[in-house]
Image (tube, rainbow, N blue to C red; front, side, top):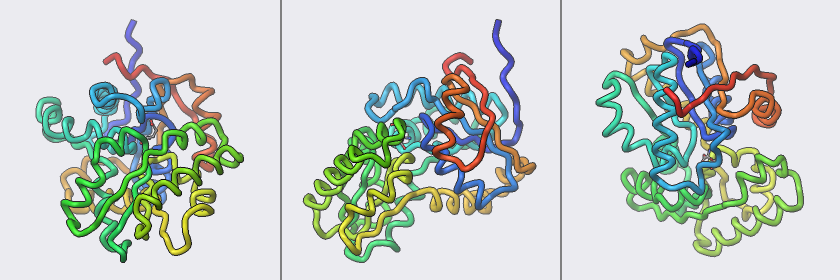
Length: 282
Ligand code: DGL
């Protein structure tokens, strides 16, 4: 028998492949605490980073549909890999059919928008999952806005695992973080700004800063996403009116509830209640 799906009509949906999107959700809730939110993590099928375009698109579309079914009119893909590999197709091909009045936004464009003011050398580095780097989404989005900026990417395939396995304080973390930063800086020593293009990476910031040359800025994206959402709601009063305001937040995962709650505490300073749901069936 099909389980009834929990409903939160008017909540803003925040989707990530797993836990990383919680870093974005925290910033959004700090800036916009009045709205209602639903967080959905596809933990059972994470990580998305190494997966193909087709699979990331398929999984992301299922999650978006699930959030729509729960009552969201607006969904944020708080995952760089999903934003890189699925957002455009969902916006162009799927939304017009599903419901042209609903919206799905990503995290890459708002991050690209902020970069023009942050770099002086006009040389920027992006550290992200292999999937995000391979998609070339960051250079494409940045060049649309700032054609003069040189963008160099570095895939950091171990970093998500370091966070998920709670190894962010270990010597192993030092080894991989130093290695990837060195490779990036060797590719372009003029880089003065590094974008953390993966929602997990803010948890590695102390070590990232330790191995980043002095004077190079390290930019987590959460604050920029939150400000961009605020601006979006201001510019789209028709969407803003559909978003309810009770200050609530519900959490859902495709994994076991205990497993999610345990690890979520690394990303959030609060104890949360989470419900397990199936994403692929709808
Ligand atoms: N949340 C993903 C991102 O921001 C990282 C985790 C994954 O690979 O699924 O790219």
